[in-house]
Image (cartoon, rainbow, N blue to C red; front, side, top):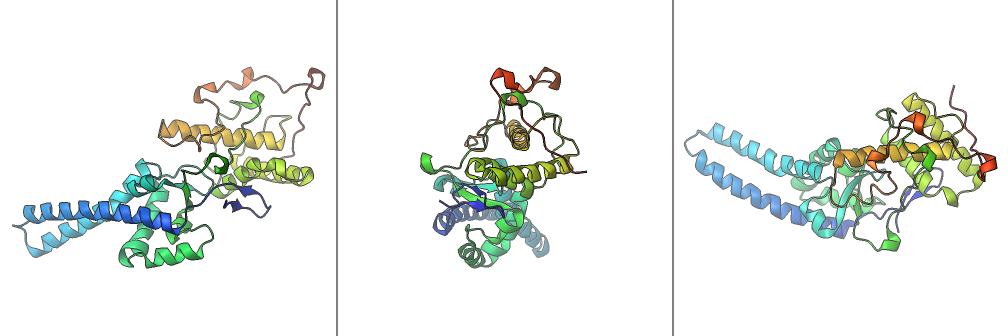
Length: 292
């Protein structure tokens, strides 16, 4: 199975879609879009028969942009990365960190798709997909997205990010995560999904480095006594919970929301129980030093 790898040799288990399935999905989308475009063009030709040539040309260009460019962008945005072709082929467009795409991702993909697919008849997209290790076209590279397979065997599905300790659920509800870049989210998810496979010393150093970067981006230190790996798990769970609440009950979002606490499970900080003490049969976690 393919995967995303960081410089720390941490692998995120996802299965990128390859050229044949992506080409079939694009072909289905193009057939649907061109059918709609021809239908709209015939209707506009009848409606604008009394206009002069300049006005008719302007209407034609506008219909081309709206149907062949704007419609695919709107569909990918509203369906969270699943156009008709991708739905038929069991594919989905996701962010590099595995989360759902937003309008800006669909916009970049659609704008690049005009050159890659429409103007060059898919030649540029095919070459880029063949050269890319993960089968990405230029639109995916610039948008920071990846087309992955959804209908895969259960044993080959992406490893879910482990949930945070129960005593951390709801601790990060007020954290401002807007300044954390997508690349850092990707590294954090990769670490969490493969933390148990790392050498303990290497894993601890990696967790502390990632946690310090998150603290530097959010400007808020972690609660006292929270270890780096637990802090990262809690922050990622909070981000995923926000994604789930924003997307609502969109179909097929179960993999993205794996390991996310219930949206209504957020509790005020003062009601969160302390981590288990040594005398209670547990080990109180040790904290990490945030950057100065």
